[in-house]
Image (cartoon, rainbow, N blue to C red; front, side):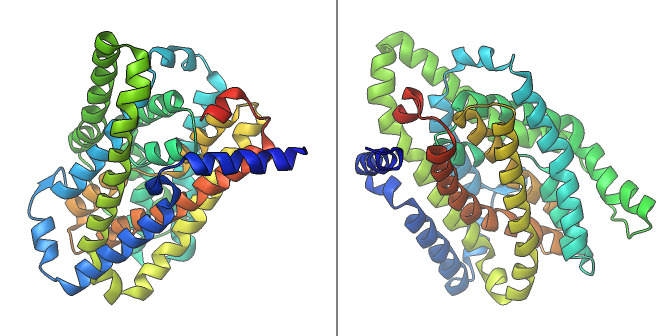
Length: 364
């Protein structure tokens, strides 16, 4: 049997083991988007209902969905193995380069290239580019069979850098750099404490819950029970949380998205270019420095993903809920979801063609 035939057999076996939810995930995500748009369009009052309460600028339903999708993924992380990853200088160095130098600079270039005549949209995109991943990236990484321990570590590091560097980078890319180039600058003041609270809520809570669940579960029932019985029961919660979050996001902006299609398209184009460049750059750079497939996939998704809840909160807090900046921030995750779902399939396709199969890959 040839290598390609073995790959086809393996893929068929994997598909047969998937649940109905996993196997048709793109269909369910598409249905959730349509449902959210219809809900927002046909029920104008839904925005008031869903947005009546907020946690650090993020509506409570979205916050609940985010926590639900992150907890099962973080409960799967083998925290006892993270110590081995911290010594991987190639992994950490490349991640910091991609996330905090290349990513923000690329979004700045794309925002000015595609939206030079739309200062509000341009500023919103730059703010999205500065907000590095801490939430949905764990879902994409898990679906692509990435390294969970590496993802948890990189997300934690990005969160720390976010607290320290976000305000400074915002000042640089919105005021200092445009001023040097003789371009229009944007007024913005970011609260470091607000950013810190956002990270503590949307990463800290599910991270602590996942860690304690694993420690207590294994201590009382053993690792076999935890891995074979408990995790399969809670795993679907992550995808249910994802679908719920998508419905709420699209419902909250359904009226505006359908009434301003040209604005959505103009904002979507640089975002799609950004996701593609960041993902493929990270994927092939990781492979070039010798990382295995799980770490390569993790690097690609952590580099391409963004912390949309922080970006939206900043845009609303600084410029207002009806601002163009807030619209650009909101469209960010609406484009990111289908783009990164597509890249999950690209990642799995490349795995079987660019990497030597290992027992760990087949198990994943």
